[in-house]
Image (cartoon, rainbow, N blue to C red; front, side, top):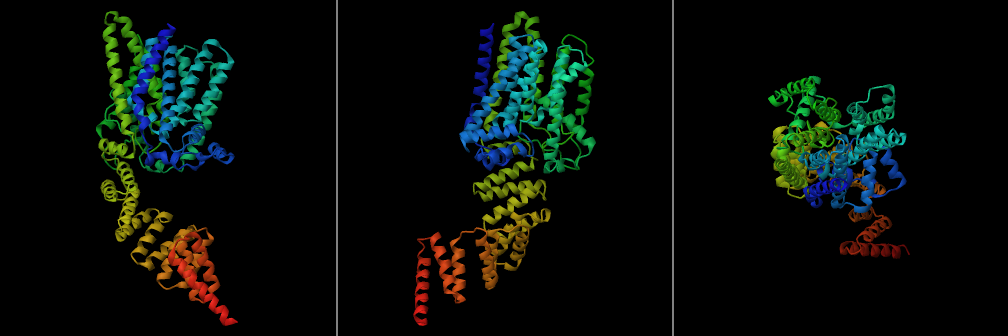
Length: 596
């Protein structure tokens, strides 16, 4: 029996490894949080005391999950900015989760190997779980699940062995899970569900067992709300009424259920319906489906407890992400199924085990059907992993599946902009602006692409539209000011530079404003700005050279020599500056002779 169990788990893990193997060749998704979480995150660079303090006292991506943050920091010491290493760790953690789901299902079904194998396969191979594994920024999913499943399994042994150390261990694992991802706050409710499954009568003792779990969940909820209160996506979602959000919650629940059985048209992003438009029929009918499911709980037939366990586990796990309290800017997200589908897997496992026992003459047929379904899921997962290869494959798939996903066009445009394919990026920003002419990110993105194409007049117009929404945006003030400068509209450029500097002193902006003053023959103002730029750390040979010529024109040869020497230190091979410096030396010597 033991060897059979180990062989079953080994075969399952091999199949999952094959299905996810292509992620090892994938890059980061730079425009979808991987820049914030890893690539541009300076906190990961060194495990210093200050950085560790930041990890445990600050948010990352608008959430408080220090265990996940710490795991990324440790991996950075091993892999740096090599995406391969992070994908390998995510795959290994997913395989660990698969083994734990197998074991949990095996235990819940009285050590039934078939049930464990089916539950593990559903979890490990389902295409909806690719987002949790293939996306580096979703490290929190695979990590929180390891600890949460470990807590559930440990609690199982506590119930049967009544050893207090098991309960303490379950609490420690729960804490690690909740501080890996806030979604783990459902754990106390899942433990009560397990009590119901084990037919434990609700008593004060049972409730006492959950007090620490509940307090941990309360702390995590409060921290999460604190960090997400300033998150831009929340403001966007709250424009919908409470009634609409309740309908969206019902739609999310039914969508996750539907995609469990038919994982088709999967996408990395699912936009909300356009504001002001009538809600589509598939959203409006979702509350009716919810009512039918609630009605089905009155069924008392064989298998009804298993059915209720499956649906309740699924529903409880989804509660934090059903958008009643908005989280993110997508109406549904495939990563949110990573825990809930464990519950639906219980239902499938129970069904397969029932069919096996009832129809003993068709076991070979059942095995063939199960194998075929596993292969289909594995192929779907393998294909989805390739979608997550890089920004271009990811966002191209999003806009193919979701033509109204405005951020899909914008982020794809940003990706082409980084690749210096500016015309292509403009086409994509225009697609976004066709959906929403006031979409800030697309306005700014198109302005930046036009700037790179030296169309400074149009670029300035788009930066102006962007500044209408964020009038104190430093980047846009700098870009519009420089666009005016390159158009030789110096009087228009200076107010932007002035406003930028009033909000935040910046050496680069002082340099630009100095140039603008200089070409207008305002030499005193230019000289002051260049000297301010140097005082703020600017190291530019041209700036020192310009200051040197200014002092020369004022007759201050000593200062002219000082600045020319500094310019030569920065560009010692520059023949023009060398020649200029030599001429200054001759002038200085001539003056010395005259004074004698």
